[in-house]
Structure formats: structure tokens, C-alpha cells
Length: 482
Image 1 (cartoon, rainbow, N blue to C red):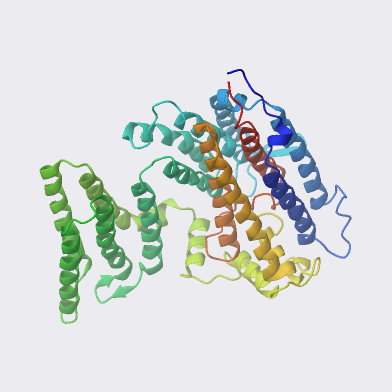
Image 2 (tube, one colour):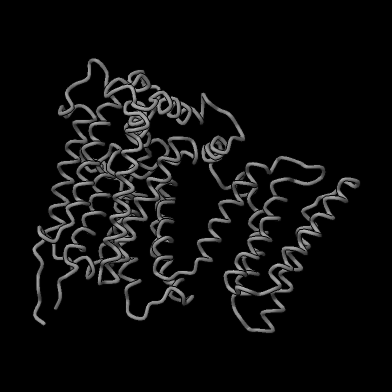
């Protein structure tokens, strides 16, 4: 069949393009509002932040147009080269950047500052899509799964060396993509458990119940139903799953009853139960030779090691400001004038907006400069204060529509490369949205990542524009055939 080339303007998904345009304009308007005062210059004046954002928007539109003009096969063919160039850019940033507010993530090129980490997202998405779309690549095979991990762990490590922890964590979003492409749900479940265990231990680790450290005891108790859940997922209907739960419940109940008369550490009882369960699972592995028993044993043992290493990681590995932010988010300390100041003022701003908001340019928190970084990481609090609950919901619905639209576009692709890249775009935007909004309303620690298309900054807007428009170009060529 002869090559059939699509008309880019007829096949382009204009719904997604329209949402993008609405978002960048809404972001521009709110950036102006976040720094507005009565002596404020025009929104178009280049001496102000809003004026500079206008420049970034216009250059982003030019970048988007240029991407659409490039043949779609180019992104598949040169995916590894693009990835390699960005890796070199990340290394150059570590070597040649200046320290700016404790971070070495900015390359200064004359009057322009570039944050290289923002471009690593689309480059990594291309490389992941290229590798995972290879013939006979199967994420269910351990060697293939291990092969793909360095693709996003390498930029993640380089960005951590730049002291940009928040941006580095964004690359964990690729696990959602891998899950869609066949990775075992066991990996995602283990990651969820690690976060849950960490939070419980930090929140309740210093609380003693008799002679028992409450945080560790709760986590150790949770390991048992987690083991049962994983086992049930592998072996629906096996009777000994209920025996694990019933037997463990009886033993824990007896141990708690004894602790009413004799003070001792109940963690040792739960550790003994976990040891018995792992011994049974090892016996089942030797009997049936099924690998999932070993995976569950590894989960149990690593969970125990993890929970007893949390204190070391928290006290000796994390930076002091990272520890304080986590403690503020979990409510273990109250520091409204220090580490918790941004979040506290942000919540006041959003709450004061009420249902309909105070009106555009009428936000008092904004005018009095109470919220630092209000036009970058905390831009959403401007939306909440001036446009209220209704305006906030509207912005969230825009993101919901964009993400669901991206998933729809990804699913209709005939090429594995294009589908994986599309899911990468959706996952990265979703992760940014989840963490940024959670950060602004105090549900997650402040880790400094922007709200896509809204926050002030050229690198961020360029990075997200490239990320999105490459997928729009790939989608526009979905019906091209040889």
C-alpha cells in the first residue's frame, strides 16, 4: 500500500489544543493577579512577570507549531538521541550551574535561565516509549523490566544531584505507564505500601502504647493483611489465606490481652507471626515451585527491613528542610511562622475565597504579599481566593478533561510507541496536578513543583508544551500507513 500522509490541520486533535490554550491564558491572567498592586504596570509590560509570561506563551506557541511541522517518524527514530542530549544537558547543569536558593538546576545562557530538568520529562517519555515498543519486549519478563528502569532512574538521579527533589519524584509517574503496558500490579501495590508505612511510622513512631512503639506495631500488623491480599490476588480461592488472617488475629488478640498484665513490646509477637507466615510460604514454594511465593516472602522481609530503617533515613539521609516539611504536612509539628508558613497562608487564601471568590484582582492575600511563590508553585491559591470554590473546580475540571482526553487519544493509537508516549504525557501531568494541589492545600509536603501551564516560568511552560505537542503530532499521524 502506498504511503498516505495525513493533513496535519485536519487530523489534529483540536479539543486538546483548545484546552492547552485556555490553560496557558488562564495561567497568564492569574500570574498577573498574583503580583498585582495599585501601581502595577500593564499585563503586557515586559518589566513585569505577567509580561514575561506572555513572551513565554508566544514562544511556546511557536515551539508547538514547529513540533507539528516535523514528520512524526522523526520522534521515534531519534528518541534515544534526544534522550542522550538531555542527559548531557543535565550533567552540564550539575557542573556549570550556579547555586540559586540551594538548588543547582539552572543554566544561565546570557539573559535566559533554563531549567534542564523540565526538558528531561519529554525526552525520558520518548526513550521509554522507544524501548518498550521494541519487538518482543515484555514487562512481565524480569530482564525486560530491569532493562527499562535505568531509562527514568538516570535522569531522576541527576536531578536529585541538582537538589531538585520535587522534580525528580515526578519520574515515578512512569510506573503508572508501565502498569498500563503489562507491569505487575504487585510493583505498584508495594510502592503504595512503602509510602503508607513511611507515613504511619513518621506520624506515630514516637508514640508508646505500654512498651510498644505504636507506629512500628501498626505497620507490622498491616503487613499481614497485605501478604494475604497479594496471595489472594495470585491464588483466588485458596483456603489457607483465611487461616493466615484468622490465626494471626487470634495470636495478636492473645498478645494484647497478655500486655494488659505484663508490659512488653508487642512488635516481637507480630514479627514472630510474620516469620511463621514466610516459613509457610517458603514451604509452598518448595512444594509447588511457583515464583509468586518468593515475591511475597521478599515483600514481607523487605517491609520489615524498611520499617526499621525509616528512622535512619528520616534522621540521617533527608535534608533538615525536607524533614520539617514532612513533619508539617503530617501534623507532627506546628510551625505556622516557619516551614508551615506558605501552606498556612495558602489555605487562608483559598478558604477566604468562599464559593464565588473575592473577584479578579481583589485578593487580599495577594495584595499584601502573604503567600511566597504565589505566581509559581502556589499559583492555585490565587485561583481559590479570587475565583472561589467555583473557579477552583472549573480549573480542576479542565485538568480532568485534559487527562481523560489524553488517555482516550493514547488508547486509539495503532502504534505501541505512540500509545506509551501518550500515557507518559497523561501520567506526568497527573502527577504534577496531584502533588501541586495537595501541596497548596496542605495534604502533601511542599516539594516545589509547578502547576502545568499555569505556573510562571519559561522552562516549565516550554517543557510541558513540547511534551504535549509531540503527542499531538504523533496522534495526528495515527492513520498514516505505508
